[in-house]
Length: 143
Image 1: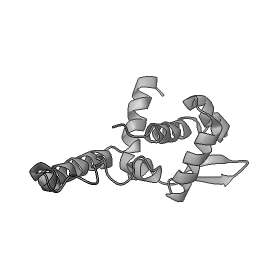
Image 2: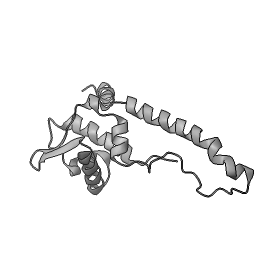
Image 3: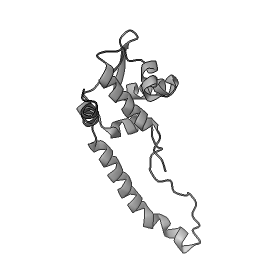
Image 4: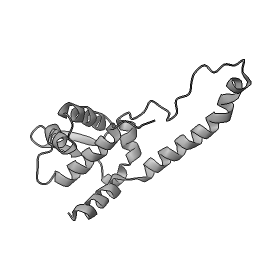
């Protein structure tokens, strides 16, 4: 199982906006050059981040900016905003054989464990703030 690359791209996007907003006009083309993807992908992600209230385009002249304080944005917020997965981490086969004792009871055995893993994963994402990632990047770059 892999989480969509949209999560990493959305994080990269916010870090690039924060790092360069004072020196450059932040556009989808500018971000695409940093992330090394097609600008269409960036526009789609920016649209999702705008809808989630994370970024905004003040005017075409000003470019893209971050709407909320970075300490109020978690990786989980981005994960939800850019639809990284369909609802659950684990896909379950939908029609186990109910005539088989294992098939009949597999959901009872696994569902609780899978739900605990999902909750732990999402809790960890909520704990990682974009401000923390920005500080880590700044420490590496010595900004």
